[in-house]
Length: 404
Image (cartoon, rainbow, N blue to C red):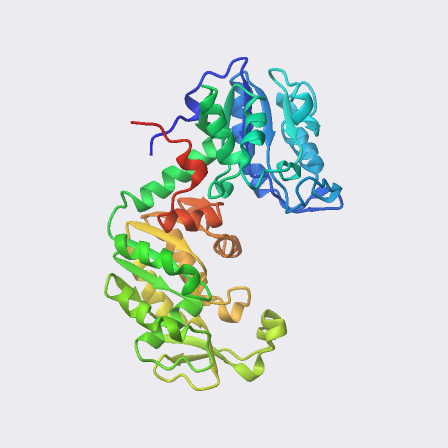
């Protein structure tokens, strides 16, 4: 990929509009989880250090366009940024709700946060008129929100096109650039052998991911309901476990393209002990039993990889030079069904290979088992991460690319 990077530009006295992903949970007017905000701050600081007048924009939640609601206001985010950037600011971060009609009115050394872009009619439909209004606010547009890069919207792809039409500068911010660098390293020029860990409840939701990874991976470890489908494709009974009978032929086809690593021993629970209305809660009381995949009973539900098999799979992880991880391999929220995920997570941490992990459940497992220090890169992209792995074009990234 070839694109301008914000780090390369002279931004002195330039008005810079940065699209971040500040879509964070807010309760009682306070930010309750600041991971995305923490990730965005280095970009804002860099722009200030380069002498720019900084405008930041983002969406928050799913409001009805044209109908602003206080619950979706970015006001608490403005307060948060003011606190975290106080040492570099001469004035607090201002929340601007009238920017489409009155402009941003920002000076060098200041930061203005635009009110939720999803309050604007045409944002999600990538309205060209709205995109031009965003472009009119600035001299330089910085796309730094990888988590929204798979959506062609006015504040992501549309504004980039409007900036180009006006012969203005567009570039990737440090956060977006780091995501693309890490994913390109893992998928375009991976050191071999490459191994992927793909967990989840259904093959159908990860079908394109599995097909794409089968082209570049020497081995793929599958977990969760996905593993059950592959076990069934090999002729094993999976009892009462979740699996997709209509995808057995597809599973067999994938197994002809790369080596799918499956457990010999799994952890099961009796389905009669499980309340599906309170799945995780009921599993806290369920009995976890280790069984061979050749001895699964009709009432057994496979919920994890047994420690012995997980350790065998961990050996493959240790030997890999590139590791891509998306999804836990068991119901890791319940300790009795989380040992498989823990063992594999520890192996990723201890491996000398380049590792990249993405997806909400994956990041939650990394946090639970405290292995973040051993993961080379953790993607916050969610849907964009999966679509990139699938080989899909991300509209907001494609719009940034320039000829070599």
